[in-house]
Structure formats: C-alpha cells, structure tokens
Length: 403
Image (cartoon, rainbow, N blue to C red; front, side):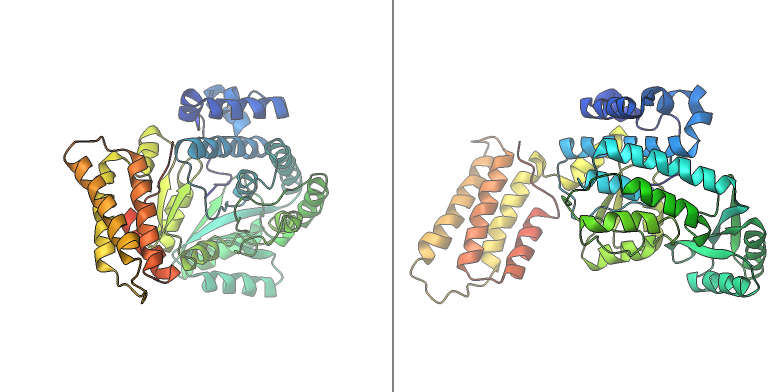
C-alpha cells in the first residue's frame, strides 16, 4: 500500500537511503530525472518549505515509496498479490507494479502537482475531514446542500466513520456546521483545494494530456484503482483512471473490503507515517498491516513472513503430521509404499538428523520436505483446495525464501 500527500516529512526514507544501495540509487535516479537534489529535499530541515510544495511532496513520496519497495523486494522478496495506493499513491503502485517507468512516474506526478496547485489557486475551494458520522449521512448532507445551490461533494471514503468532503469554502463551512450538529467532527484541511471533486475538472483535463504523452506496460501484479475500487483490467485503463481520480472520490474502504473478500490477510505500507495502516485498522481486523519505515519494522516483517532457521524443525514436524492426518482417496494402492511411505520416511529421517544435531538446519530442508509432502498429497488424490490448505497450514502463513 502506497500513501498519498500528507504523509511526507523531513528525513523520510533516510534509514533506507543510508543502509541500502538500491534505495540510494533510487534517490539518485530521481535527482537525475527532475534535476533536483532529492537527498537535500527529503533530509534537510532547511528544505521543509520547499518539500511542502505539492509538486515536491508528490515526487518525493513516489521516490521514497519506490525506494522502500525496492528494498522490500531485495530483502523480503515476496511478490505482492495486489498493490494499491491512496490518491497520488496509485501512481507509486502502478510504478512498482511495472506499468509505469520510474522516471516517467516522477515526471507525471510533478506535472500533476503543478497542475493541481495552479487550478486550486484559482478556485475558492477547500477540503475537510469528517469523523464519527456514517458515510451515508455525509453523502446526504452534501446532497442537501447541492440542492440549495452549493458546490460540495464527498471526496474520500476512508473508513465507516471517516470521510472527506470537498467544495467551495462556504459550502464546506456549512457542511462542517451541520456535521457538528449531528454529533460528528468536521476538520478543515489547511492549504488544500477541492480535490477529488468535479470542481477539479480543469485539472483533470489538463492532466489527461500529460498522461497521453507516456507509454504504459502490462502489470507484474494487479493494482487496485481508487475510482472503481477494483483491479485494473489492462494498461489501457491507466490514463482514464488517473484522470478520473482527480474528480471522483477515493474508494479506499471499498478497495480494502475487496482485498479482504479475496482472502488477503496481510499488507505492508510502503511509505512514511503509517496513515494507511491506521485507516485499515479502522476498517477491519481481518487484515494485518505492517509498517515499513524503520529498521525494527523490517526485522518484524522478516520474522513474521519469512521462514527462518528457528522454524525449520517445526515445519518438518507439521509435514509428518499432515501425512498421517490426511485421508488416502487413491484406491490403487500398488505404489503406496513408494509414493507415501518412502517419502514419509525420508522426511522423518531429515527431521531426526536435524533434531539430533547430525546435520545443521538449512532453509533448503524445508523445500525438500514440502516438495515431498506435496507429492504425497497428490498421490492421495486430495483436491487442490485441500492440498493448498495443508501446505499453508504446514508453513504457518510464512513464505519460503531461497537464497
């Protein structure tokens, strides 16, 4: 998951820059592409005012998020089943999924920031967060005010009781007053414009012309669109989706619910501040989200997601238990001795040799044992669903990373 504007701060990404060559190279590539010193812009306290400019906060977030993702792939290496981003973060997601070249992504978001800033500066518009009221109540407030001639819209659906509204300053103030009357909280966002609303139609049209200048590639893995809260069907949808994103509300909650329905139970936020982790935790407890910003968080992810030496004996024991506990549905027992008993004994021998200290535990031992278990389950004619369940049970939700 890749965050959007508002997550940036001075020194973001410094741990990765200082400790991983691939991250430093990502910063250097950004500097070469946009002819800006990204190291200075991100890390120097003297550059805070410059960093806060929309075109800079957007490009630095893409840089930092991409650097983090590249470190993740090098150090963890588990290919994502899905990627998604919040607003601007969708460009980072598309970049890391291979659909947009990194240098192109940087140029796209810089132009995006310049266009949005220019259009917003000529509009009497703003945004506000709304808290403690359900989404349909906020929608109704906006609808009622529009019926009175006000220009105001729900611009983000973050959690069941947190949304954003965008509109003219007068309309947003009126809405906030009504929200307070109904028991909610309305928090105006300083130095903002009426983002993700029809008031940004000029920015949307101008941005589309920018997007049409670039080439796009097929996805390495699916990316969720902010507009539809569903995966892109093809690279041909990128221009329209990113264009509509400027005038349509962000469907963050629907996006997370889609992933949960697909069985996703773990996510990693690739960016500073952990805002998305907070939002997901307010949506559901079915999805565990990891921060990925500091050294200790990298270690936590490795320990929780990657099989290490301390897991080896336990996994081999689970392999043995799986063989014993699963029913044989193969009526032809002619090869049972070779296909089940022999492989079981080979796993048992490996377990005993490691347990007794005859051989050192090695990650390769897990792959050997799991491959033998998989062959046994296939011989027993378990369904693919049953096989997958047994293998996941054995691995305990962790992944095998071979050197």
